[in-house]
Length: 319
Length: 264
Image (cartoon, rainbow over all chains, first blue to last red; front, side):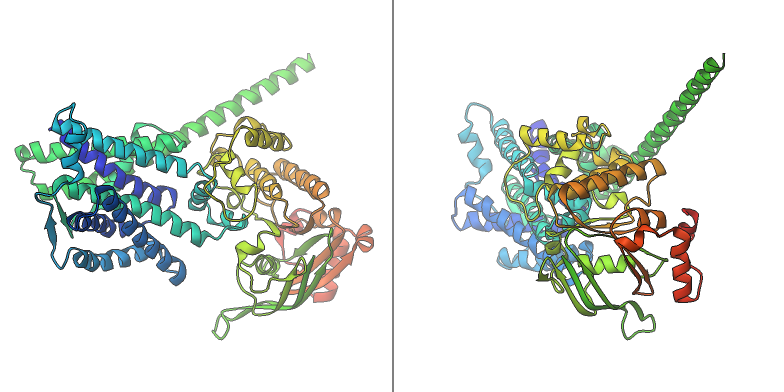
């Protein structure tokens, strides 16, 4: 049971890394995510059923997501529409495309077919099935985390981050922000689709509605992570995203598992997620207000001290 | 260095809000010139910079930069020749990133690759450069730029702008948002960099005394036109009241800028 939460959380954390890139690093409110997550699941499932190897299936899923992200960025760049609208457009179109990929059906099962999650136990036969699945997922998540960390330490990655913080600055540095947006959004949605591809294999089916509400869940996980510790180092930011994702999944698990005591049904979980995000925002706001009030107080105190010292000096000179 | 021929800019053409910001403007700036630009609010100074920089397209005319016709060149491509600093200190740096990340982005112009070039030798270089500012920033390479004061941010912006060695500098009231002490520091640094790297410079200022003290040419703009253009020799004997008087005699009206009058 416990391993299940961790596997679930870890698969989810790859998606949250994608949301982190669009929302926090690019400052692009991207809703493509809800569509590209299901695209990843659909592409991976269909690829596996058609006999492609498992790594190739995952890679194809990621490529599908990257294309979706690039489309959103291009709509935003060329038609000058807000990122939010561009994302909704792509997401809506993806719903039809995903059903096409799934061969006209809303979902496809992965029954009696080898997936990563049936392979992991034979690969790591020294531990039990569920621990082997956890270990396999953990390795994939670590590879993704390190990839993200490395990318945002390269010159290109740093300029993508700079664009998210200040677009005028990258323009002044002679870089076309449109290209950076395409790269960033492709990377973000590649991760999201890869996560979808993993989830389909873990739960044994792909569903066209798999991505519903993913953005908000991702934001909730990011915000939970931000409560853990404060940092501007990318390796720690991605680490806290992974922790946040696991904590979020654990919270939702307990909500589902023990919720019935207080009459909670699985359909209430979206409400809970939304409330979680709102509460996180309120706490974050109160905290930042408190810290700036604190800084103000300290500055006033420093000034007062300085004035007292100056007065004392002046008095000393007089005597 | 810069040659502007018959340039004009009309905002919202064909609507009731139609406004001519720049009218048939000609300007030739030689390499190594330092031109100060004054003018009342809405006279078209900032529009002039936005047109040179490529923020928006011209309505008519041509712009030649460093011998090339850049009239229809994208803003980020013109940035290879131009270094622009804005009035708002937050425009030149990325607040959510560390000082070293900001500087590595500014080190060279143009698209970046998948290389990790921020290493010990780059950090040493950045520390060396930051020492020129004498603000203690050399010990804060890993601090986010958002933690710096306005003066520190503008000084850092200036340093980052000259780091990639542009040929020309456009300064748009870049000390106006700072307190007098920091404004003085940033202005001193600006002069130091301009002489060190021999940068051709255009500087918009609301401070008429600055306009007279700095540079080797002074331009006064009004209603999208250049109404006064003074050479270095003419500038030497110039005073602020004399400049205001010039405006009055040309335009038959008072010089409308509270800031200018306050900073007499």
